[in-house]
Length: 189
Image 1 (cartoon, rainbow, N blue to C red):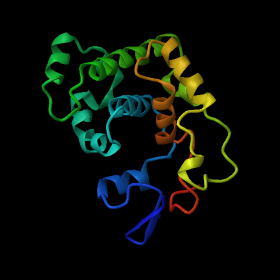
Image 2: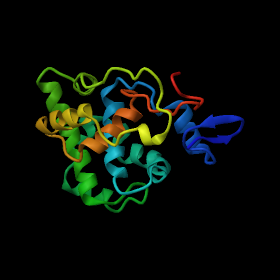
Image 3: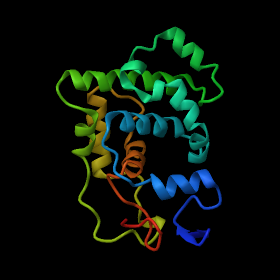
Image 4: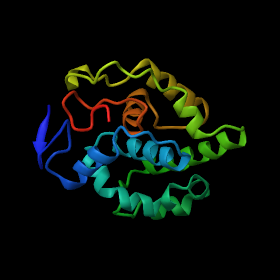
């Protein structure tokens, strides 16, 4: 569904300035740094079962709680730090989601120790661009062969909370795919 706000046509996010900014400036823009990819993977995992706007509203709390998403810093979190995070109202206080962020930070560090980066691993699964933007949300898949393969590769590297649907959402957020709907101000920027 295309919505119109502020004389712009958006395929989602209209009506909330935070959501509009995310749509216009971030969603679908290529991300090629390990810290930023780590952030998106953590946030997509945290979003599971919740509305994305909930995570956007807590994003600054996440950045503070997870040391700016520095994988080395988060990898060093111990059980005491996890217990502190369980009391932090600035994030989703779900033990499995918090522990997954720490596990995934350790996996990012582990990748580096093998001579690769999270960026290299993730971007090898970028599909060929579609010839045209999707005409409607019904044309946008929940997962793809590439997101299934990415999830499998991440799990093999020690990541958790990285299923194919979550990884497709991360691929959209990080610009590996451009799923802005035809007619959207951000389609095929």
